[in-house]
Figure 1 (cartoon, one colour):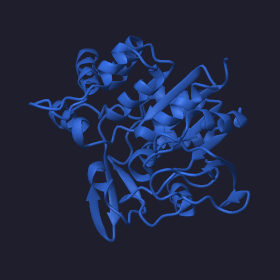
Figure 2 (cartoon, one colour):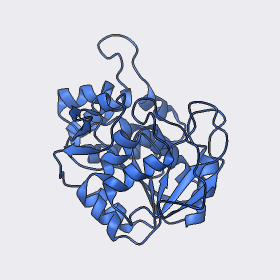
Figure 3 (cartoon, helix red, strand yellow):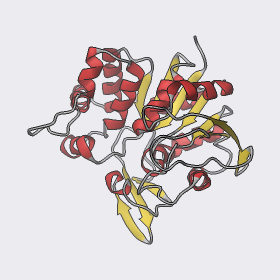
Length: 297
């Protein structure tokens, strides 16, 4: 297997599911990951050490690494004491960032340790915050916005952070770009709000595939259907960037399903359907998703 250079944009558990699928169709996989998380273990490290949030990047590393003793170490989370809530992998990445001078270098080192089948790159090198207007009230912070309904637009603070140059190079060299799945406002859009990444996508001539979520996310996307998700996405990135949409048309065991739209297109973008939900988790099934993504390469 060789396959095209593939890049997946986003964060959280959704992006990890996309990476597991992409490793089944390509040997050249890169995750460009949001660093806007300010809650839990990541948030504590952002405040205490001043590093970009490592949590989403850690999940992506583990998705690319498969099962091993060292992967289990990275996934371990402390349950008691002063370290309660910290994922050990986050602490290792924080230590590596302190040693190497950047989260990007830390991720490269951790990737070698884990034998990852791909690269994980922060979208930006510095820390960014998410800001949203919710009913005329400015709400700041990824951890707060996750539980806030009524969001329609977000922005970054600072608004024009420079993209990590390796992330930018990966997007420009990609033969396939995947956007999502994942929390729309707090995982997917933060990467697309980086102006240089958005501009690189606009200049590309490759499939840019938006993978719709399986279910409504309570709080963040309460009351939104797939049409709303795509409309919000296009409001943030502009027309002509996303040129394919993948939706699930099979059963979903957990949560309120996002019902796929009628027709072969949505807001002028072709729609590809498949039974994509895992029978055992609330995530996309990697094998099923890989089968759909393979049609774009």
